[in-house]
Image 1 (cartoon, rainbow, N blue to C red):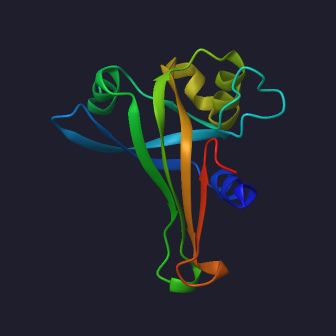
Image 2: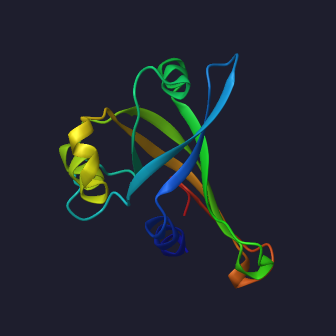
Image 3: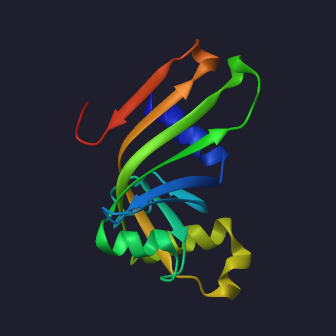
Length: 146
């Protein structure tokens, strides 16, 4: 069922990301590129999102104190039978993987001119709600659990 989650993630490009520095909470919206950690991405053996953000943002200041993040990607619809969304948890750090940088700029070529700082969210948990499979149907993937 991970394939269903990953297919959904590849159809979208904006996430909500929640962070905390243990005192304050924050949530933001970010464009993302998703890597399953397979194929040519040898170094990126983890399922990962790549996002761009500057050190001056609240969420990156939080990440510098606490790498644990959570977020979601959703299909906005009023039709209950079409509701789909993915929640995730992971750890966020500065991106060093050249192949993942290429992946981000392939998805967002206009961003190259901005010289953004890129970050990698290594995902450890996904939970997808998919009402197209039945009302309230959940698909869960957790790293290290078969």
